[in-house]
Length: 177
Image 1 (cartoon, rainbow, N blue to C red):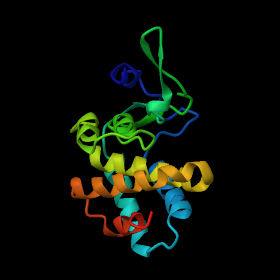
Image 2: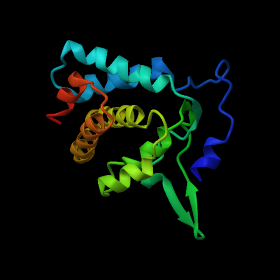
Image 3: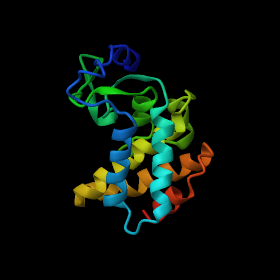
Image 4: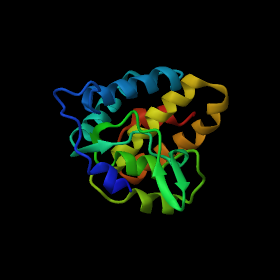
């Protein structure tokens, strides 16, 4: 189903009313994470977040659902249906796959998560960016969402190490979460 969704031609990047998930938008999401989820920010964190955004923005783009996780997959008449796709836009090719694989709402073995994420170029950076975006959202919403902060932060730190991303200020910012 994901391949079918991603094969939909992305909006014309020049005329789309929704800006694509480019460097500017990726940075905006990472800044939101830093503002809402990181209690005390090291100035080096800004450099790490920009570095991460560049790694993601330099990848091939496809149509991304942008909220592709277990809660947005429904089984109707024995068929999987994708719901909640109003935020779809052009973005890094691994985005939806890592969104599902590293979904903090679901408990899975890390080995299975990594297998589900695949080995497409940029998988690690995109997964960390997506998790940071989610962390910013969870922290800004509070209460019921705080239960997902620790699993998302743990996964992001694990992926930083697994993919040798060498973003020490980001790793340090995620550690207390």
